[in-house]
Image 1 (cartoon, rainbow, N blue to C red):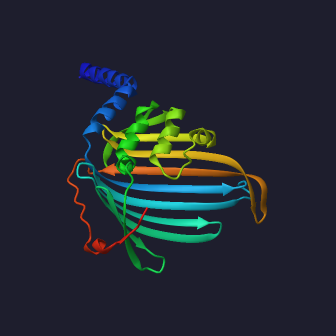
Image 2 (image 1 turned 45 degrees about the vertical axis):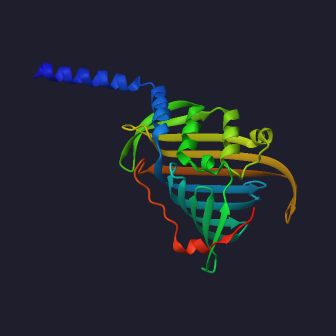
Image 3 (image 1 turned 90 degrees about the vertical axis):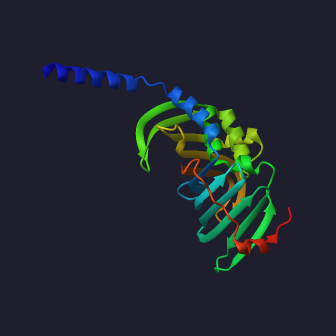
Length: 270
């Protein structure tokens, strides 16, 4: 019995040493490889943005919280997304709700006005729409040009995950931001100067190596001349954005159908 206990202890120590020496680059490479086979998935996303004009104590502040759920079928080029957004801009609060259906090159948008009335619109999407809309591809691209550090494993929605802390190459990250969002400056030199901090964590499933969750925090700051009430002269604008995306039902069948009322949508000309 004593020998069995000693063997068990030695095995435990050996296993611990193996885990500690695990090469996180292997996780990265397997995640990059398996992601090529992902064709369908569902996701949920939250984006929290804070903009301060001036400084923390006397500046004007605006905040936005946006929550979305969606599904995507990259093979048949179909996407669905339900978005709810609450904005507080310098003391005034607004809320917005919308649903978007995209079929190939056409988007159908259901907009819910503040008074509760509903309007449908349709428009052609830009040529790079599908590249910018593939959330998993964006997270895997971010992983591809980052140095990584393995943190303690965690479970996300019942899925055992490796947790990776990413340190992206700054020039590549600026390129990534410019390509993945229409709401950032296209002048990459200016964008790089504005970017003050980047923090990224990714959760990778231990069994499939699929991405399960990503957190990205960015802090940008720029000086400007302003005249707005008590805010006058040279001030700074600081924006902090935290984005959390979770993925599930990867490579499971996705059904995205256009509602009947969307067929009478008003067409928007670009």
